[in-house]
Length: 279
Image 1: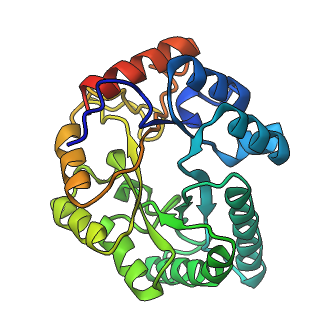
Image 2: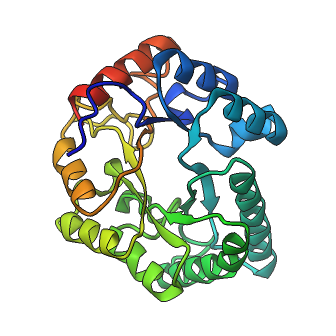
Image 3: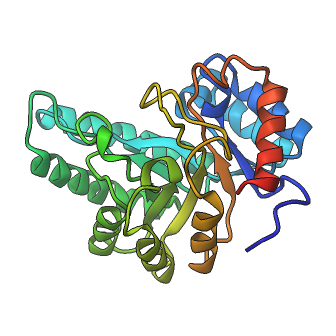
């Protein structure tokens, strides 16, 4: 595996790690103070700053944009809802293009409002990605499906395993791959072979890090810092790199009780230290 102990240049900060009250400027300045080489902004933080200012800020800092979070949320109850979803995804693609992001992360969406038809939701997801893909290709933006843990199948993402995501990629062709988030996939008995499969096809676009706390007190907002939980992070990175992944290790920690109340420098200092020793 790559030696990450010397510096934090191959680490990336997902802005969610600092919590909802910190700005994009806070995140960029924190990356500079701690020698972090990449950043992955959420779209609400891009909107707060304004896209032109976000582009200027990140370029001036010399940061690599490892992903934009997020596109997706395709399933809808009717044609108008599906149209609005496609329009929002086109806007997200434009933002990713302006930021020269390595990918646009897709959290694909769950059941359509009022529906219990999971098969229909998955069909809508694939149709929505297919409808967005030509435009993404035309502006040079790669789309990365992020499979989410099955507990989110109803409301956030009906694509729940790496295998499911790669099946969609195989049907849709070039320009689409996966974001491997350890929080969502660490439990999957097929994880290692599916990572290898993704690597063979050049579809490993992003790698997201945190840890699974035991006990977990909130299924959305109680992620752990690397090394504090149950995930064998070195084993997963070993599989990723054996499959050809040579990109950034992006830290994305939703932690309302444990980490968001801490200072930016405490969060980032711990993140860098753990990145050098735990992943």
